[in-house]
Amino acid sequence: MSYSPPRAPVESTLAYDLYGPDRPSAPVVVSVPHAGRAYDEALLASARVQPEVLRRLEDRWADLLVHPLIERGHSVLIARAPRAMIDLNRHEREIDPAMVTGMPRDASLQSSAKLRGGLGVIPRRLPGAYELWRQPIAWDEVRRRIDMIHRPYHATLARLMRAAREAHGHAVLIDLHSMPPLPPPAAGQAPPAVVLGDRFGRAASERLMTLAADVLAGHGMATAQNHPYAGDHMVERHGRPAHDCYALQVEVDRSLYLDAALDGPGPGLAPLQAAIAALTEAIACEPPRAAYPMAAE
Image (cartoon, rainbow, N blue to C red; front, top):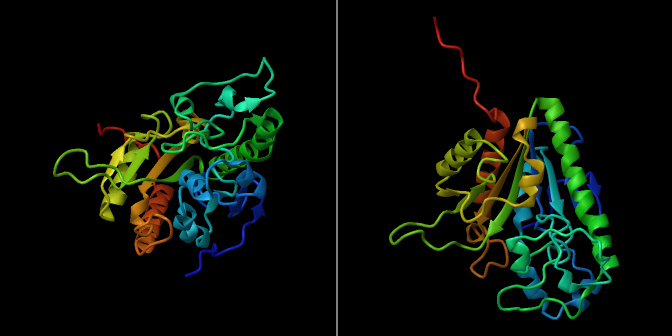
């Protein structure tokens, strides 16, 4: 089986591979921000853990889920830089000052629960691996990663969303992630296969959330909404319903498409690709908000 995309990217940078036209053919833009696997030697040398620990930060092989969308000509943005280097789903100011040297005193930072848990814009630690890095990271290197990776990714995503809105009247971001299998919500109940997040209605709409849940249910997948994942910086930043820009985070159980070790593609890849394609096509064909007819006289 080939893991290469069905088409060559129209643009490839340190930050991302971009597929599809500058003017999106549909009002949907797809982002896969945690699929990056381009670990350079300097990053690996600076880690105090083995590469397989750093790979735990990835949404392992999530980019394979969008290959049918690339084949169909959708606008798709896939991260190249690994999450261990920089997390595109965090604000650029979510920096832990304890892991940085040479930071200016007037640097503007932003705290969050994820940052305090070790998962800021530069991840610091994981459960079972207290510290990921041998030594603090120089401020100049942090700025380089932000300037070369984080800002270009978001700038390109914003440009695609604007182009989709101008061409189609609205734009919808599907921000695709994968998650570890969730525990059952209660005895005798199956855990959700997919968690849909729209920041509790701030980034999308009830109509979009219901449509997404219905399409996935048609593929035999139970969904949850905004719990335990409501979406983070990606949908918060690019979802602006008041400006006809919507954003929906889609977290899929990675055991659905990976092997038993959750390391390589498994037999469930093709069915999940079909479900993600059906979800994307449905959202592309439906207005994000209902248009109510006037009552008859």
